[in-house]
Length: 304
Image (cartoon, rainbow, N blue to C red; front, side):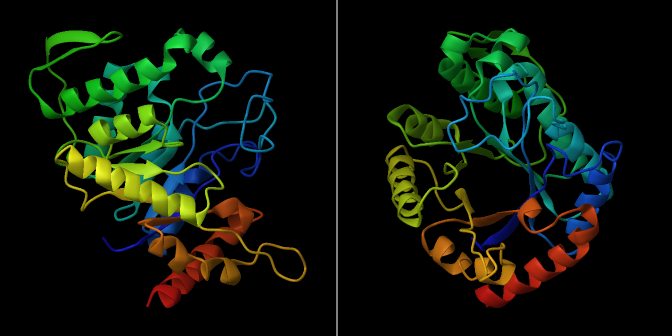
């Protein structure tokens, strides 16, 4: 699989000025025009006041900051673009309900002509589960069942599914996704036995935790590949979204050129999509066209 350049668009916080949310469509078109392979959005449905439970460093926003709904934004971007793949990293499917999530994402895959990828996770915030009426204590089971139900709905007419938390018989979800087998699912997180089993059965890819080392990526890819082969699954299309290690210059500022030099080692470790957050290098949307042009050129140079 040819390595792809993946850029995270900051659909949260105050990077995009108030009243300018419509410009995310413009931002996506800039990426498409520059030849970026893949753009990625993140997700929180609501925020509780307590962000201390976030385990990966300081939480990037205050609870009252905007979090633009990623699937809605991707639908708008899909209409304005033609090539760039549209991804989440991550979206929380359990909070939306399996059938509605399957319907929404199938429709998005259709209108984007098969460009959708779903990085999915359970989430870390109890308040979101409480607010959406989903049982927090059963979140792992609900997450697994939601993914299984989506795969059933995307692939069978009529569809039936029975699990401890989701049950339906002989229902029709149309349209189904354009992509054969359904929308690719990238399961995020540490490869605990439960998560590895979930990924082996239901996933098409993996998103390592933020800050994962190259050795951690390499060993994780090996674990996944071995487990999938043992279960008779083809691993040739496995997608691994790896974060490019960030580098600074002598002025202690993020250095794009130095950062891109880290890509070959990430790909060698097993990543197929080298991922970079746009906001680390762009203070505003006005900086984005140059960033997209520079990162595309530098990525191609280092991978040539």
